[in-house]
Amino acid sequence: MRGAEVAGDTTFAHTPGLDGAVRAGVQEVRFRNGMAVAWIRVVLRVLTLTLWIATGLRGGGDVYWEAAVANSLHLAVGIAVLLLLRRRLQVDRVLLAAAAVDLLVVAFAGLRTEAGDGASVGYLMGVFELILLLAALTLPRRQVSVLALLATAFQGYLGIRTGVELPFILATVLTLGAFSLAAAWAGARMIELATRDALDVYAAQLVGDHRDALARANAEIAAKHDQLTLAQQQAAALTQLIVHDLRNPLASIVQFISLAATRAQQHGGLAELEEDLRLAGEEGQRLAGMVSDLQLVARLESGAMLARLRVAPIRLLLETATRDVEPRARDLRVTVSAVADPNLMARVDLDLVRRLLEILLVHALCDARPGDRVELDAGLVEGELRIVVRSSGPPVPAEARERLFEKHGQDPGQQRRGAGLGLYLCRLIAEAHGGRMVLAEAPGWSVAFEARLPGATA
Image (cartoon, rainbow, N blue to C red; front, side, top):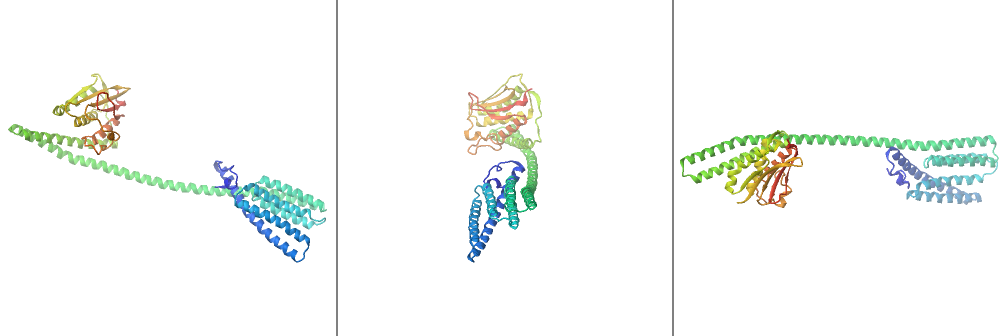
C-alpha cells in the first residue's frame, strides 16, 4: 500500500506492523476522498456560476454579478486544489486549505446576511454541516474538530449579529457543534475501521495463499524426496545385483587361471604361458577387488555400513600392507618401506584401513618409475591419527587436485590407474572414522596422501 508516500507524508511509510499499515491506508483513503470532494467542488461551482451569470444577464442586479465573481474565485481555488491533488503535491496541506477556503466562502456570505434574516442563518448552518461532513472524510479528526469549533463560533456570532432570538441561536450552535464533532470523530473512525477491515481481509487472503503455496511446495518436496529415496534404493539394489552376479564368475575365472598356471608349471617349458597366466590372474584379482570396492562404496554412501572400531597396533597394519605389495614393487624396482612407532595403538576398523592402505599403495606403484621410493608412515599429530603414503614418483597434476577425492574424479587428460573410485573410497573410509583425506605437502617427496582420523586415538 502506497498511502503515506502518495499523500506526500512518509511518516508511516516505514512504520512496521498492522497499525502502520492502517495509518498508511487511512492516508490513501483520505486522498481518494479528497479527490472526489475536489471534483464535487468544481462541478458545484460551475453550476452555481452558470446560474448567477444567467440571472445577471437577465437583469438580476449587481448582487448576482458579485455572486458570480465570488463563485469564479471559488472555482479557481477548486481547480487549483484538483490539479495539486492530481499531482500529489502536499496533499495534507492542500486538503486542509481547501476545507478552510470553503468555510471562509460561507463565512463571507454570512457576513452579508441582513438583520432578522433567520432563514439565511439556518441555510448557512446546513452549508457548514455539509462542508464539515466532507472535511471529516478528508482530514484528521483534530483538524476537523478545530474547523468545527470555528464554524460553530461563527454561527453563534452570525445569529447575534442578525438579531436572531437567543433560544434559536443556542439551538443552532448546539446542533451545529454536536453535528460537527460527531462528523469529525465518526468520519475518521469510519475510515480507520474500513481500512483495518480491508487490511485484515487482505492479510487473511495472503496468509491463506501462502499457506496453500507452502502446502503445495511441501507436497512437491515430499514427492521428490520419495522419488529420490526410491532411486537410491533402486541404485543400491542394482549395485548389489551387479556385485552378486559378477563375484561368482570372477572367482571362477581367477581359480581356473591359477589352476592353469599350476599345470603349466608342472609340465615345464611353458614360461611365457606361465607369465601370461600370472598377469591374467593379477588382473582378475584386481577386477575382483574393484567389484568389492563398488559394493563397499555403496554401503558406505548409504550409511548401511559403519566403522567397527577396535584398538589395533598401527605399525603391524603398515608392515602387512607393504608385505602384500612387495612382489609387485620388486618387479617395478620400487622400494616400499613402513615407518611407525611399534607402540602406536589406535581405534580403527581393521578391514577398512587395510583397504585404504592397499588402494594408496597400488595408486603409488601405478605411477612409480624404476628407482622410486614409496613410504608408509603413521603417528599422532595434534590429537589425531595420521596415516601417510608418500611417493617420489610423478606429482599430481594441478588440474587434477581439486577433484582428486571426488567420485570418478580422475582428470580427463590423465590415464592414472586407480585415480577414480579408489581415492573416493579412501575418502569414504576416512569419513567413516570421522576424518578426511588430504593431499599433503611432504618435503623431499613428490606426492603425499594423508588420512587424518581424529576419532582413532586410543
